[in-house]
Image 1 (cartoon, helix red, strand yellow):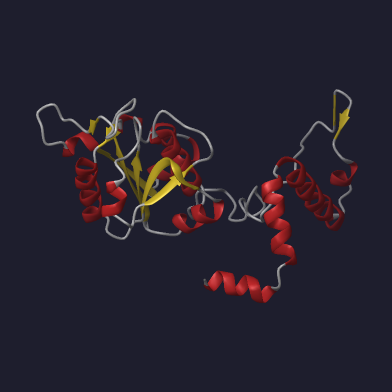
Image 2 (cartoon, rainbow, N blue to C red; image 1 turned 90 degrees about the vertical axis):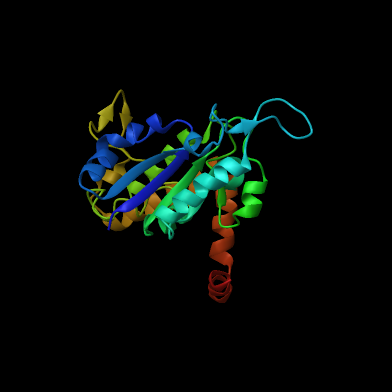
Length: 246
């Protein structure tokens, strides 16, 4: 099954962009995913193809109009009715690896790229199914870069894209932790040695070392992740099961 992506954007030439090369590019050539940019201006109703207007109540910048975007969303829904619709906005919930995995096993995704000061909020009132997501606590010039990031995260998880099916199992965030550090040859580089345990051939010790480093690095670098990881470890299994049901 081809993972179908639709991107509502004012800059359709940005797609597939970097996703047209390397793993994602090869996957596209093999038909594992498809990319359809949709120009938001095609849904404008005036001769100037206007898509924005000044903010109600005053203020700097321009706001993307709800009526124009709604027409574009309806077009995308008709073409791909089962795909989730995501809007890239710093007001959205931060995307997680768990959500990426959910998206990657679905039929595809429709992404709306914000620009200027963002969206007229009535778009989301009219289309409650739109999921507002953020790529982190940063503000970009537009949603296109965030959309490329999100698509890359999904595409690499599609069957057959990564060389080994287990390639992503121990990566950062998959187990609630940052990934352990990696090393490769030469063994001695400028007096810095690969940790002896990794050269020992003792797989149990290597696994224990990697788990400890993952925990140590997460605790030091991402105390927010570490707190959630600790909570999950001490929570009774019944609580976890009930949360999953909720």
